[in-house]
Image: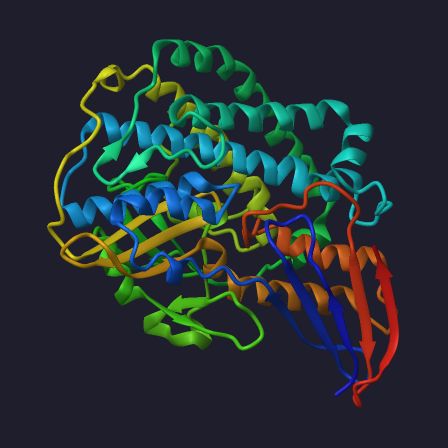
Length: 474
């Protein structure tokens, strides 16, 4: 076996990870791996805590998408209480989740991947960051900040703060949307719509600018998993759990969250702390699937709102009914932002939100509960068992990024084989390896590295383990 290349850490993603590439003696790529090098352990230290604390505790898993954990955890709590939450509570949870998707997608497109997309994959790495983007294209950078701010404001207006609001609880929510908050959001919506249309026009031009990246950034057939509404339209909070083949055939569909155990198994890789879920009936070798915006747009029959439906038609005309390139995650995020804004506009005028009945009260009626919802990055599962007093006995969390783990590894290998042609690894190639991961917008921890210079270490290691060459950028 020949040389080994290491990229450590991968930057402008949420969390810490590295990439290793193994070369053959003729400098062709033998293998490539994406490793998550941090360990969290929430499943274990939540044991023994009261069920009612779980939304607030698990929201601390992430500073970018805490609302996703709030909602999935509260839904697992609803199942343990065996309650149906008040209609106003469900609509308010939906409203906060829509705000969460908008702010997270805006961050991913404009600030994490924007420097690559707008400045170029081979541009000066000292300027290929959010500050460089602001210098080169102030208006686009400003659009991104303002759109993300809008999503964060929805979270703050409902939950009292932008990050880690302790607002969703088993049985419902803690507070309603005030009239002044509704008026503020209505005032901000036109600008948010304008930014979504601006970004959609931008991504359509970028697809033409980067044909090689579109073709080689994780472009292969996989299965797709996510929620859809009972009528087949795009869904983010509840509905049917659907899994689809790469040709668009529905392989399974279940209305019961507990049905995930018949669909999914989890594997552990020795070189990463990230689990590798797969579609159980096909096994680990054939059961790779993707979740998140790309999967959701492949899975749904329509978006369910006028503007987003029009965009989905164009999206499929430009691509296909089932889009397989992970580069298109960027495009799919922007279609979802538009859908979110339309649903926000509809929800904030819903008179049901004025109800003061926001929480169903009950004790422990079941000792097991599963909550599933759509996080910005994909389907999120919280599975708890409790004792008769509601103390947590066990926790299993299946995070969206983990479900994309097999596909991210395959994407890294595809990118490496496409661009690495010899012993010299140009900086732009290293950046493409990272950008291929960024297309999935992985969320590995509570941290983000959206600002600053990209640190990379690349080592060429001989078969005897000696380091032949090393390139370090700090």
